[in-house]
Image (tube, rainbow, N blue to C red; front, side, top):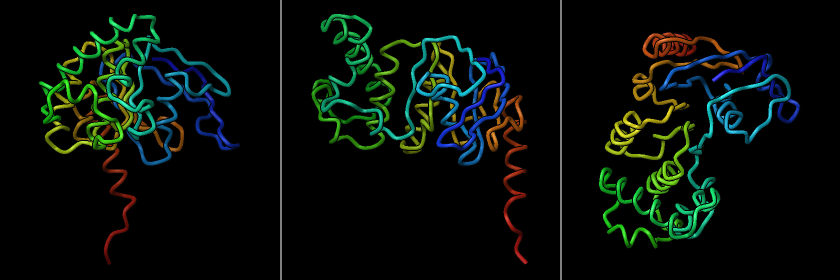
Length: 227
């Protein structure tokens, strides 16, 4: 991933101004306070946003897991949702169904996130799922499409502790390159490298635990001390 003098202005407000970043980390974490530009950076990498100036490079194709599951789900059933990206790639309905069902079976078995059988889940209505289940379905759909790079925006926020741990274990075992933005510093401590964004600039970049510790010290210093 490389960003060269990247500028992004949205609604007359600068999000990034001349941002330069470069990382070849296989597991890259992005941290920073609200409004630092974490989500905007992921959307730039996917191509949902276009830079106002400068350029970026990433080893695509990419897939993005949205922070809010309902913003990503498009179809009324799990089956339609999981097949959509595969059909867009030019697969037949039979091919898309087979790959989507294989991915669903793998994740359902490993996570235990669903109590129902795979068949009943396949035809389930997406609006009847919990937030955690929707998040899991969205991730299954991304992985079924087999992108080279996974862009994950707060992937742990909708999950309980058990499924947080299961998701981290699964993510770290995947062959794809992963770029993950999160406030969950414990999960990101397992990354190869972390970038700390603040006010649209790179405050620090380096080994995960080192950058996270500096960020925690900075955050603690922002909290007023008791009299």
